[in-house]
Length: 142
Image 1 (cartoon, rainbow, N blue to C red):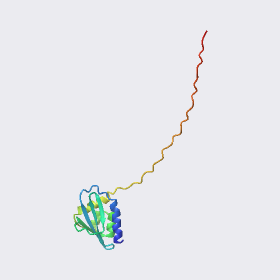
Image 2: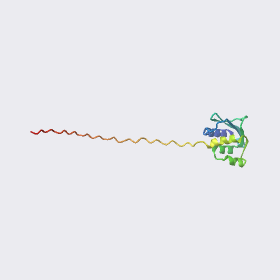
Image 3: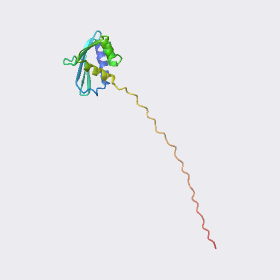
Image 4: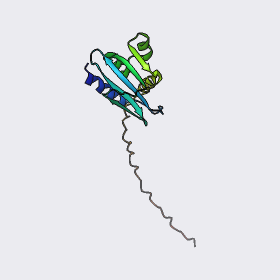
């Protein structure tokens, strides 16, 4: 995977992130090593998330990993704790802010397909029957 593809995947994942619980500014620089080498950042500000293909010099933390590991993290296929434990990810700075971004990725609500609306059942017209009025003849007794 090349650098441009990786940034594109990160941007797609960011569109689905739920950052409603993040009430602070977070800037995480991601340094990709090996294939697809480069740097990009993920920033959360004012309830919006941005992913841009640049270094963020005033970042809260820096995450370093391979493109495969970054892709797996953004796809939710890799547990962050495992990645840290096995050394496939390193974090410099405030790791809590990087974790907040990962948690926002996990909190992505699954979109369920909209249920198809059933057309309203048509009621059969009620047939009205004519009621015959009967008139009684008055008989007079003599």
